Amino acid sequence: MILNEVHRLFTSVVHISRVAMKDMQLGDNFVPKGLTIEIPLLHIHHDPRLWGEDALQFNPNRFANGVSKACQHPQAFIPFSFGPRRCIGQHFGMMQSKIVVASVLLRFQLSVSPNYKHCPTTLLGFIPSPKTGVQLIVENLKPNVF
Picture 1 (cartoon, rainbow, N blue to C red):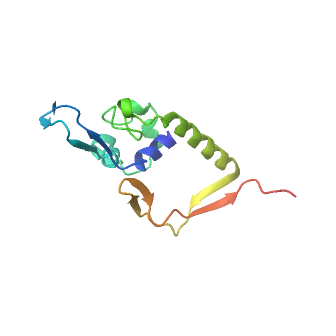
Picture 2: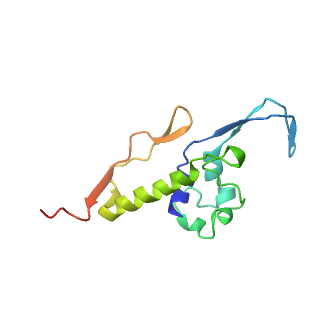
Picture 3: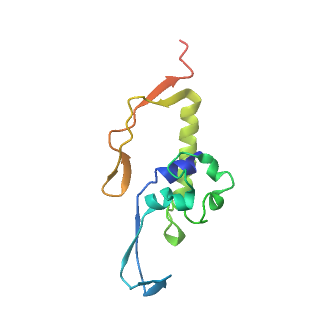
């Protein structure tokens, strides 16, 4: 639940692009073949109409009943894209994240520095990143005994 909420608030990319392979109708909109469609993941993941009034707040409990019931639309959570073009490393990346987080939390207590200023930006126009880094206070839970 925590990793899903982190991916929702701080998605890996802010948007994904797709090219229409044929003319199609999407609701009231006509999409001609060859048109590039931008899917704004960051906006979808922060939309209060989908996620509730606390959309900008860190709330892992929204995933307590599974990903498909976390918000108003069952497919509004798409940090790794969706369909046949979904990231092939999704499961590996999530497993690797769980192992790293568990390994760190076994040895250290982390807290955000009072000097930290939240200032998100994007690298290369689509990769979210903290502009000034993230200052953490790291405390060793298991000091070396030598």
